[in-house]
Length: 263
Image (cartoon, rainbow, N blue to C red; front, side, top):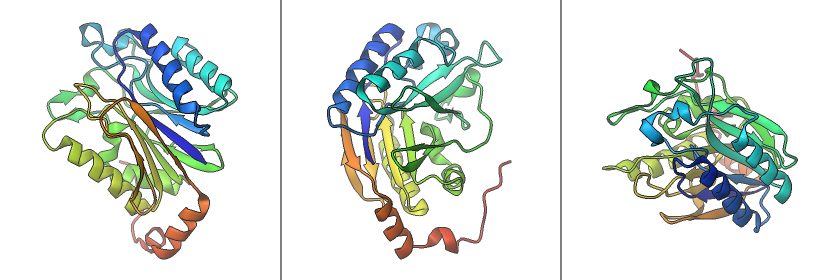
């Protein structure tokens, strides 16, 4: 399976973001990946007008998802991207990852569980958390577990995804810059790969507000491809054989003595 992670920055202009999605997917698709991963909040940045993301939220049959489906069909690639999805609370939508198949079908939706109530920010003031349940989709012969940004700080989340069959952790993010934040990002991505003996594909927003550093890691935590802090994309090929080899050498998933139980 060939995967591309895209690094770019969305804005508060939803129409411009849809155009940006069309552009960056076309650029990444030129390398013929099976999957293109876009960052969190690609439909609209968190800093929308008046700072209220509810104004930007859409349903899963809205214009943003329509753009994803059109791009997927046009280029024959699956796409994972972040959006704000309307919930039962009109003031607090979901922070949702949507997985679209190469045929335009909706493969799955993951609504962010761990809201970013940390480092002086309170995401839960504007967003509703999703149900605590792993979301795993099958693309290109591998099983992909979906998680978003702050979820990376909770190792039990990734372990639950792996227990549900995930072989690749897909991590769209808008990881805010700050003291040691870039170090946390790269360290946690590497840890999630090593402790779960799985691939990790992380697509992050960049620019003045977010750190970028999108990358793809193998099950030993080695970096297969990376973007840096500029706009662009990185691609890598993921194979079941590599997973099998690493998990034979390091059978830590078999040797563990604990299971994950949601609160």
